[in-house]
Length: 183
Length: 139
Image 1 (cartoon, rainbow over the protein chains, first blue to last red):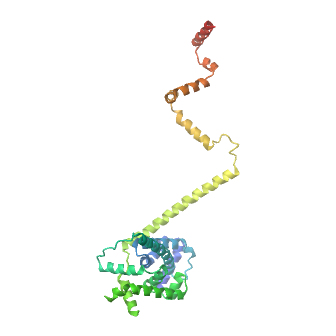
Image 2 (cartoon, rainbow over the protein chains, first blue to last red; image 1 turned 90 degrees about the vertical axis):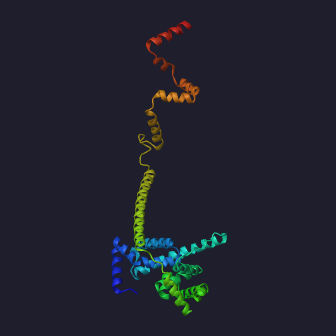
Image 3 (cartoon, each protein chain N blue to C red; image 1 turned 180 degrees about the vertical axis):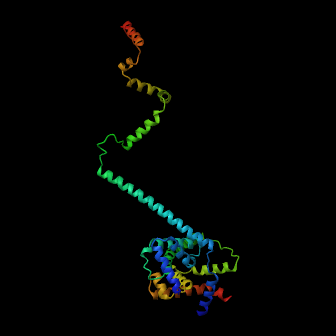
């Protein structure tokens, strides 16, 4: 939950950005880019893809800034845009990965040197077993600390659907990560 | 599952992806560069669209082009350009090049084009007198 001062500051920046103040929009990007990056990275497992999603999300936000009524926070608005871009991209990516597996062009396992890299790879592999919607719901919960209702609003689905998606996602992760956690 | 949730949270936090300050600055710089490029493209597109609309209007309304023969149509402009290209080449050079390509054809073509009266007018009085006396003798 954001502090009131932060909310006021954001509202002022949004107001200025709507008037065409580029510095204000730049400040809004600065305030939200870490979170949007983590969200996109967790969805797509790739830094370049995550940066692309950020660019596109901020571009769409900038273009339709005048239609932003300020009912929610700017961060929430950009997050919604980014989540939907991520789901679409992840869907395509999964199809390509599947095709690569079928024709035998899958990536060779990379040599990870650091423990943190190994852990990242383990988590990425586990997340790779999730469907786009399962992954998006889980990432929004884990990364954004959001309630089911907030996730439902962001994804444009019913709250019950989010509960089911997260439950299924965790079951799949459990199967993949159980051995790693039991070491 | 609660224990699993905790462990998952630990793993999640331990693998948190981060952007460096340089990457963040580069990202915003790229964003503004992209915006500028898009605006430039949009501006160019608007001008091109306006030009097309004006041309379409002129063509639709047929604003007097067919009545004004002094206005060069595209084909005529092309011919004019062709003429301009050869305007600074001497006639001898042109003829030499043509004759070297197809001598017989060019000579025949020139012969067909030249009128007898015109040929006579090109002669000086002495040459003309000489030819006339040759004709008298032959008759």
